[in-house]
Image 1 (cartoon, rainbow, N blue to C red):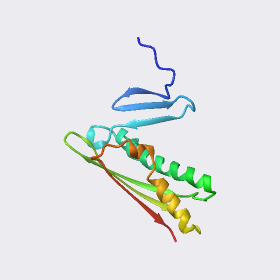
Image 2: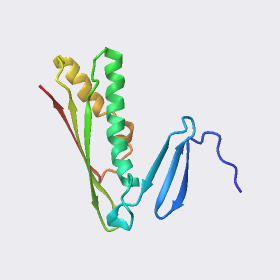
Image 3: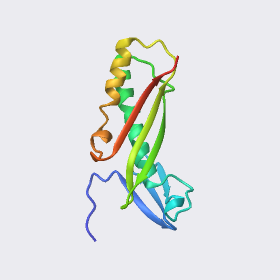
Length: 142
């Protein structure tokens, strides 16, 4: 058996029945995945491609949060709605569509500019295949 690298961040166990259990080693948090209904699974948890699409939204909100923290902008309560579209064959994620809703707050034009720019600086986004459609919209609630 080969030795694991020292920078292992997570482990994933195949539980059977098209289900996995992923553990974040530092925190102990566990994420369960299940194959989707349209791919012979039970659809009882996030599918791996659901997590893939959702990680983009989480990354965008995190990078926006860093920019907000640096400038003392309160974006608490911001939400992201994620739509994943599959394509193929072969089966793949063809598009991720995200609507980010920022709650009604007195954002200045500069704060909106900073947050919108931050939304485009996500490392997950920079890691996506160029064929994948990435459609992100920011909505400033009034």
